[in-house]
Length: 194
Image (tube, rainbow, N blue to C red; front, side):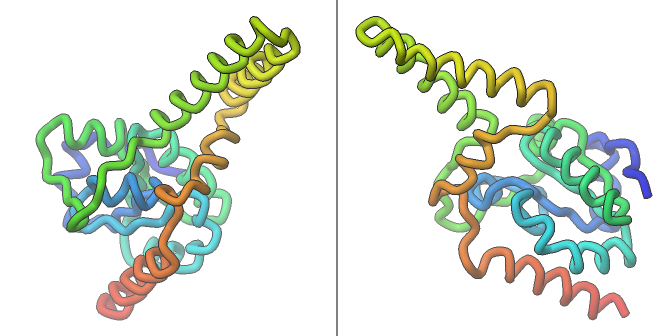
C-alpha cells in the first residue's frame, strides 16, 4: 500500500471532520500547539501504536502531521510498509498556523522548540565547541568533523541520529500515560464508529 499525495493545509482544513489526525512530533512540541483533534503518537513510538493506527485507518483517512512535513512523510512511509495508508500535511503545523487556522495548546504547556531547531542548536554548538577547543587542542577539531559528517549522512539518508538522541531529553519524552491516552482515544473512536 502506498501513501497518498500530501494534503495542503486548505484541503486538510476542509476535510478535518473526516480525518483522524496523528501528530508525530515530540510531546513537548505537540503540547505547544497542534491541529484540533490531533492524537500525539511520537515518531519514535510509531511501532508501538501500529495496531491502533491500523484500526483507525480502516474506519477513515489518517492525516499525519509534524512541524514542517519531514517527519510526517517518514511516518507515512513507515506506515505504508505495514500496509497502512496515510497522508501527510504539506508544510506541517507551521504551514497550518501560518494560514491562521485553529491551533490547540495544552493547558499550562510551556513552549518547546521544534525538533529541527533543537538539532540546529545542538549541531551548531558542537561544531563551534570543536573549533574553539581546537585552537588549544588540535585533536578537538575531530568533534566538528564528526558532526559535519553526521549532517552529510543525515541529508543523504533522510534520517537524523541527533534528533533520535534529542528526543530522549525530558522535555521531548512522552509521559508514561501520554501515548496510552492517545491509543485509548483511538480505540474509543474505533468503538464509537461501530
